[in-house]
View 1 (tube, helix red, strand yellow):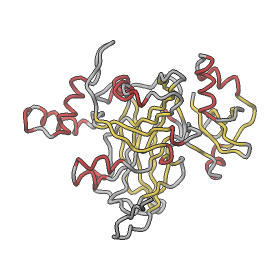
View 2: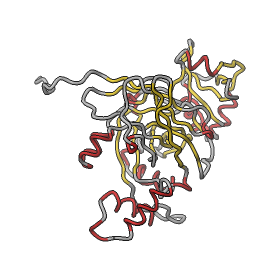
View 3: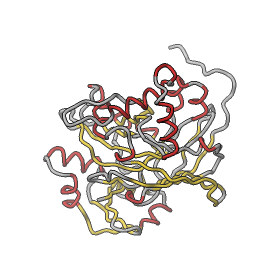
View 4: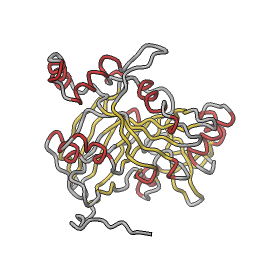
Length: 332
């Protein structure tokens, strides 16, 4: 089952994707988060709650897009209680990239960069056996719910940014129950969106490069994740595709298992606060920046995984460059 969220005249509603053209509205206030809360309170599968409230109203999918009614497929009513994070160096990448990495790995010792050491840890211990804890991945913070941009809406680029590059990724969506136990709602397509020039200048600026908006959706996949997923990432400029590249994701194409990445996120007590929503990006192996692409205002990112329905699309909106004067903090 796949669902979306819509902004209707009567408020926030989730809707089931019935076809490429039609959505069936779920008649419950509060959208996906409201459905999840009922499922957690009553101890029911989310799909059972969805069918309970499934209505008769049909919405034309394209019209919902044209009217900018689409929202991220799950949101928290208080953006401060939505945490957006991610893990990196998790995917095996293309065959050529993998061969190159393995050639470097055979060198061993101090010749490996920190990134290659981290990747090697994942290859060797990212998929532990049952009841075992695997290698710890790279982890980063992006922001709270205010940085999440709805599908079809423009990703804002701050005036101080050096780059505005897409990162096509798988996203896990989670809500903690009243006891702080995390529950996975499902998965979505995501554009993690980073500043790769800042990151490339110095890897210790990785944290700075990640503090950017992001987007995920439009559809939320409820249920088991296929182990092998093939998609395509594109950039459209003035109506023409200027760059496109296939990408692979799913556990068969990852150095870490989803369960291992989840463990190393939710092992921290601070991430188990009751009621919080977590949006967690699982990493990528495909970037237009690596192929020398520099994005421009009004370029549109399109990230497509057929198993997730419609592509995630977002244009770019660049803010004017910042003044060279430093920001002034006022004294109380």
